[in-house]
Image 1 (spheres, rainbow, N blue to C red):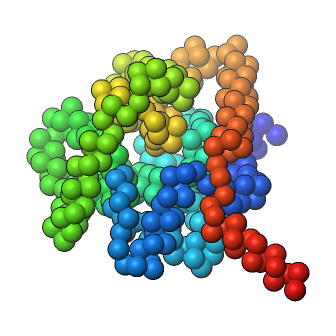
Image 2 (image 1 turned 90 degrees about the vertical axis):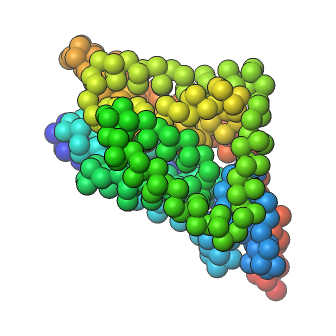
Length: 354
C-alpha cells in the first residue's frame, strides 16, 4: 500500500486538490471576490459599449475573455475555466520540477502549492487574470529551462504582463537570475523580449500606458505599516521566504537560484511600496517556485531521517487543516454574489415555476 501511494503520490495530490476545489465551487458557485466582480463587469461593459473601463492592474481587453465565458456559460463556466488552468499549471510545475531530479521533493512541492490557501481561492472565487498570468509565466520558465534561451520566455512573460501588471515585479526576479549567473547577453535579450508585448499595445493605445503609470502611483503606500506586517505573517510570506533563503544558502544550485530569485522581488516590493493588500493571492504565484525550496528544506539531511518522518506527516496534516480553515473563512466572509448573477438565478427560478 505504501509503495502504491508513493508511486502515485502526484496523481493523488492532483485528484484530491481538484475534489476540494470543485466541491467548494459547487457550494459557492455564484460567489466571487470584489475584484473578480469588477473584472467581469468591465468585460461585460466593453462587450456592450466597446469602451473600456479603467482597471489599473491589467490591460482592459484581458477582461473580455472572462466576460465572454460568463455570457455563454455563466459563473460555473468561469470557474470551470479556472479549474482547467489549474490543471495545466499543475502539469507545467511538474515538468519544471523534473530538473530537480527528486520525485519526493516535486511531490511535496506540488502538495504545498496546490493546497496553499491563495491557490484554492484563486481557482474558486478570484479573477481569471490571476491564474492565467501564472500559467503563462510558469510556461515561460519551463521553456527557458528546456532551451536555456531567454528571449522567447521573456516575450511570454510580457504576454503575462497583459493579464496582470504585477508580472513586471517577477520579471525583475528573472532578470536578476540572469545577471546573477553572468548571462549578460541573455539579459539584454530578455529585457527586449519582455518589453515587446506591452510596448506594442502601448503604441496602439497610449491611454493604456497612462493607466499603467497610474497603477504604479495607486499602489504606492496603499497599506499602513500595521497592515503590511499583518500580511507578512498571515499569508506566511515572511516565514516562507526565510525558509526558502535558508535552503538557497545551503544548496546554491542553478535551479534553487531561479526558484528563489523570481519571487524574491515581490517581498521587496510589498515592503518598500507598503502594499501587501493582495498578498494572499500573489503569494500563490510565489509558491509556484518557493514550494520547491520549502520541500527541499523539509526533506533535506536529518530533516528526513526516519525519526523525522512523523514530524513531516504532522506538518502536512496541520498545513492542510490550516489551509481548509482559512479558505472556508475567506469564502464565507469575503465573497459576494454579483447582482447580474442573482438576476439570472431569479429569472431561471421564474421560468421553472411557470
